[in-house]
Amino acid sequence: MKRWLMDILCCPVCKGDIVLTVTEENEEEIIEGTLRCDACQVNYPIHEGIPNLLPPESASE
Amino acid sequence: MNPLQQAFTDHADDYDRWFDDHPKIYSAQLSILRDAVPAEGLMLEIGVGSGRFAAPLCITLGIDPSHSLAKIAKRRGIETVIGVGEHTPFRDNTCDAILMMTVICFLDDPLPVFWEAHRLLKPDGTLVLGFIEKDGEIARRYQGEKVKGRFLRYVTYYSVDEIAAFFQDAGFLEVAIAHRRKGFTIMTGKKR
View 1 (cartoon, rainbow over the protein chains, first blue to last red):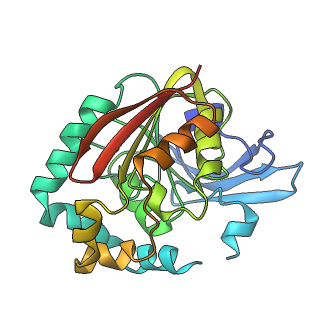
View 2: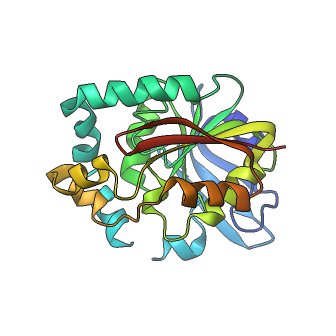
View 3: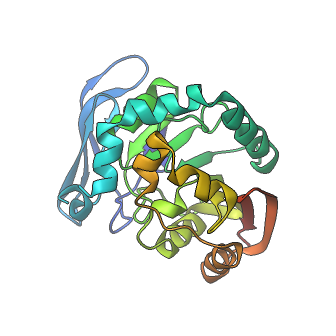
């Protein structure tokens, strides 16, 4: 996931701000980490460079 | 995971290979889309799949619920997010154009995705929608085909009038038909 994506990303449910935590990054992009919505108290994972922002309901289906 | 998502997860490579096995249809669809998709600014494909349309059309951003397909799209250079069109993780007024190519037929309820597309587009932004028409020639042909049939057994097709109503209900103006042949149609709508 490229850094510029943070300019347009928001929580898929409440559309509020999300906070990025990076655990692995290379010169090009963020590889592993989390995107957290404090309002909804949900952590969305970033894995293998792809953020998973499926709302909790659809992810559990 | 619903049966459709399971089918895309289990058969992502088959889905992607279909385009190599049907080069004439693929290149014809691409050529039609090139005329309909405005090629400037930030473009998003909702239901980007494996990126077969986004990559050659220079669409930089994609969203799809399937992990397997998102990985392939990412390899094609598209900034891909796993998510659903009914609840997209993007801010208001961010996109110049949005493409949905043969996606609408897979949705349980298409209208919320039209609302989201309208929310994401900047004023003057365009939604481009490619779809297989209800009772059209292509709809009948795909039903009998193995690979396409595997995914398309779960679909609901819509008529031009029904799709136009979705555009209008979501607030789009200047709703128009950009292409219509053999039951494959491209419609566009503008946000004002």
